[in-house]
Amino acid sequence: MIEVREIEEIRAGLPYRRFEELRRSLGIPTARLLPVLRLSERTLYRRKRAGRFSPEESDRLWRLWRLYQKAVEVLGEEAGPTWLITPKTFLDHKSPLDLADTEAGALEVEALLGRIEHGVFG
Image (cartoon, rainbow, N blue to C red; front, side, top):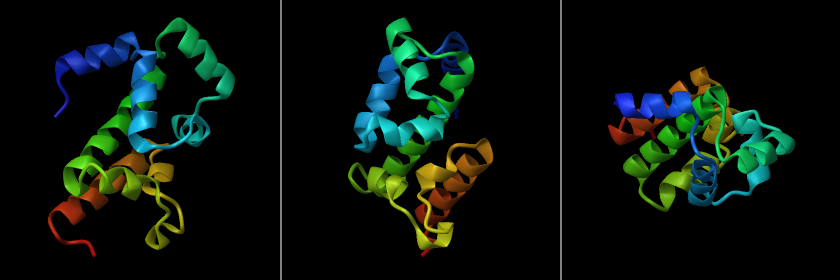
C-alpha cells in the first residue's frame, strides 16, 4: 500500500536519482526505459539537469518502481528484473515492462505477478 508521504513525493516530483536506481536495478540501458516512461532523451536530459521529474512523469516512474519491487518480492533479486524485461509468448512476445507504459498494462503485470505468487500461473 502506498503511503501518504510517497504520494506527496510524486506530486512534488521524484528526484532524478530514482530513474538511475531503477535503470540500474533492471540492468537495462536508458534507451530501453524511455519509451515505457514516455520520455524523450531531450526531456530526460532536462530532468537530469533540473534534478527532478514532473508530477506526471514521477507517477509513471513510481509505477515502474512498484512493478520492479513486486517482481523482486515474488521472484527474487535476480529473477525478478529478468522476468520484467524478457519477452513472453503469452504477451504476444512483449515483455511485462513493455506493457507497463499504461496503468492498465501495469495492473495486468501486477495481476500476473499475483498469480505467480499464489501458484496459479504456470
